[in-house]
Image (tube, rainbow, N blue to C red; front, side, top):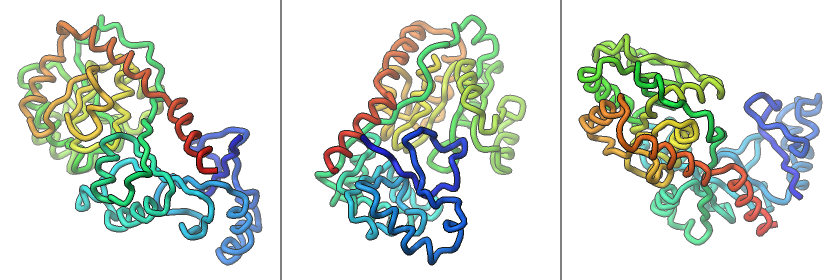
Length: 330
């Protein structure tokens, strides 16, 4: 049996999983734990280090003052993407994070990659990882049911965008393509779920004449996000680079067609259950939106393929594969 010990969080808030077997160091939050960095780096930290058989950091920069060299037990690390190496000018602290990523990969006995695409990128940038990588796909938290039956979906066709909107996410290309589609199909709308609009976003939307067509929903709760998927004719996901691409899975689970770029990991996720387009071709994206704004032959079959495909990506299988690695190393 495994009894995970979690460090680096102040409390088990709503974003941290709860489970009877999920423990924190017993000094976390106590008077001794707040006594200062010197005590933390002394015998209290040694107690934690001596109690563990395997370490799996959630990211490359360790918390609680630990260093990679502190851990004498086997280590597993996960590589979600190589964005900081691939797009250093578009990511904050890119050089530091790329360096920490490399150090973590070199130290680890096993490296989990979340897609074959990520594995290829890893071996391109850190070829020393060859021979110790393993691809384990993410799962999806939404159950594949409760899809919209489509009866009123096309009265006011709504598209959905989910996630960040920085450079490589290709959001402004999507806005330009959407503006072209609106000129042909004026009833369509776009909902953008995630971060609030920036000033630049609002200006771009204004200059494209889309102020009444594009709505922001800031960080919706999970139930609200599922409802947004179900009420949308399609997810629009033109990102030029993804380590995995969970929104595409979420769309399929909720009975929504994922329209994604045809690059990096997205073909692995979408398969034949969605539409993939060149992320540089505005006209192709616009034409696709116009087509999807009304029911079309094959739509029902595509949605059914999505419901079947999403069942191949489960958190239970992800956990099982991780446990296999842990058992081999301990």
